[in-house]
Image (tube, rainbow, N blue to C red; front, side, top):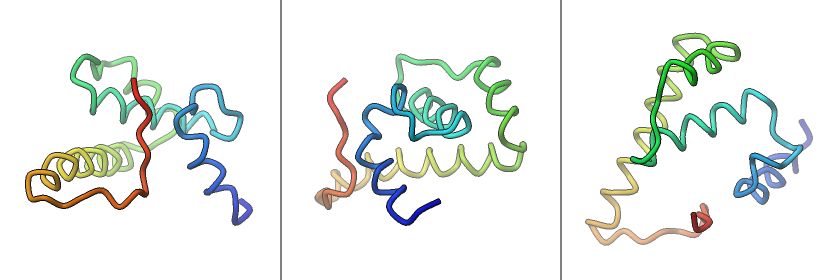
Amino acid sequence: MESDDGAAKVSELSAWRDSLLFSDAERVALEYAERITYTDQAVDDAIFARLKQHFTEAQIVELSAAIAFENYRSKLNPALGIAAQGFCLIPPR
C-alpha cells in the first residue's frame, strides 16, 4: 500500500460502497460498523457469514470492540463538552 492510499480512502469514506479503493474485506467491515452504529439496522447471521469470509472470530471480536468503543466515545465526548477535532467528517444520511 502506498503512503497516500490511506488519505485517499479517508477522502472517499462517505462513498465507500461505490469507491474502487476499498477491498471486499473493508466493505464488509464498514457495513458491519454501520449496522452496529445505526439503531434502525440489524446485525444478523448473514453479515456474520460475510465477515467470517475475511476475518477470524478473534478479529471479529476485536473489530466489534473497536466499533463499540468509537460509538461510546461519540456519546461520552459531547456530554463532557469535548469537541470534535475535525478528523472524521460524517456525511448526512
